[in-house]
Amino acid sequence: MVSPSLMWFRQDLRLADNAALTAAAAAGPVISLFILDDETPGEWRFGSASRWWLHRSLEALGTRLPLVLRRGRPEHVIGDVLALTGASSVHFTRDYAPWSGPLERRVKDACEGAGAACHRYAGFLLHEPEAIRNGAGDPYRVYTPFSKACFAAGEARPQKPVPEFAAWQGKIRSERLEDWGLLPVEPDWAAGFRDHWTPGEAGAEARLEAFIAQGLALYADERDRPDREATSRLSPHLHFGEVSPAQCWHAVRRAQFADPARLDRGAEKFLKELLWREFSYHLLHHWPSIPEKPFRPEFADFPWSGNPGALRAWQRGQTGYPIVDAGMRELWATGIMHNRVRMIAASFLIKDLLIPWQEGERWFWDTLVDADLASNAASWQWVAGSGADAAPYFRIFNPVLQGEKFDPRGDYVRRWVPELSRLPDPFIHRPWEAPQPVLAEAGVELGQNYPHPIVDHGQARDRALAAFQEIKGSA
Ligand code: FAD
Image (cartoon, rainbow, N blue to C red; front, side, top):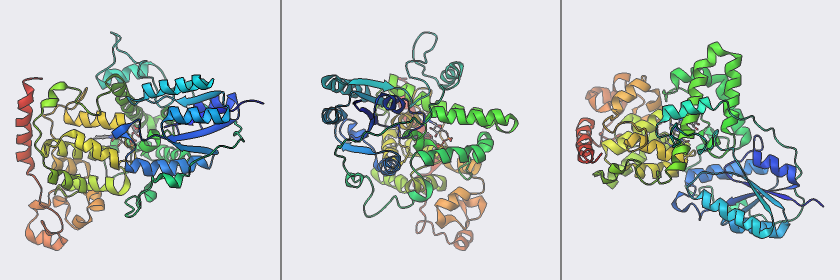
């Protein structure tokens, strides 16, 4: 009798283009295992919105193959499953979190202890972080040469089809997904998520197809507009590995080659954005402390001075700056926020409120469905000015001008801040400048149903620049 093979699903919750699953299927009848490990990642265990997504995604995967669910440390669970089933090989996709290298070594030891072969595969990224090096053989610290090196490395590797496989027919205990408590109980703050998302491989495929059909042609010109639907919204699907970056790459390239006149610019821009994801992982791999510590050490002495009340106002979308509040409320309602608004909201927290970027990073970690250790940390540090290749600290977003530029009619603000919806366009991003009769006509009572700005942006900007001067000497 052929002994079974064990497929350990991690952030690769798909059947197509999954090298680990393909190899497991070739090795024998497949035991499909997912382990909820809340111990190893410590404070970076899945946040609340990610847990909602994970539940739905596992539910979807469980309709495609019999899934064994276990909680605990992977090395213990895998050792246990090997002992119970006699599986002779274990297959999994590599992960890049700072704790994953040691974890994967412990899993290898557990496999060796049980006499099983242990195989690790690439698939979460286009390029392994060790593979892209500069002329001196060092990792890159700047995005543009990194992305050029990625393009020079060639097209994404070929995709693998869904493998033919036989599921193992033996008996093994599985925990019940419902018992994991991944979904919110009362109040169900995720009630609105269902209207926006279909977690799982089929949802990811549909999202990619829809983006290529409708968004890609607009992408180069409109990706910065939160009032338009020009971006892919693939980030949570990519994060959970319901689609691979190689699948996205090839799908976009196919469309581009079929209709270059219409799609060339959008495709090139989109592939560059996928490379920002790669760059974030490149940084995390080579500088694993970036989720906690500033990449530029002088920022460790930054004189932060924000207060908890201001942090709460930011989290709840009650800062009095409409574009910031719209973004924070979009985040709460849907688990996502448009990239441009993430930059504006993050800049506001760090520079207008002088609150450490790590506070914002943690809030995003808990509330984003695409919360991702590498992209979140690298992006927060980019906005803070403390990161590799970051925006300079003194570039401080003006939330009014940003709103007027990227949401010119105020449609995005009106959607997420309905108390301002009847304000005329010239005041939608600056309600405090509206004459009293205009406010009254629009039903806006500042300080009653919408806050006054919690800081004056001009003064806050001066304060931030003065704070920056304090560390600049040590830069
Ligand atoms: P698209 O514009 O369609 O881009 C396609 C894909 O490219 C995305 O799905 C994503 O995987 C990748 N990508 C695009 N922009 C970036 C970027 N700047 N950095 C890294 N990858 C990128 N992205 C996350 O996936 N998880 C996070 O936790 C996260 N936190 C962020 C925090 C802040 C403060 C900021 C400014 C950005 C953050 N981003 C994060 C990056 C970016 O905002 C999202 O990837 C993007 O908004 C996702 O929407 P989309 O899928 O429609 O993107």
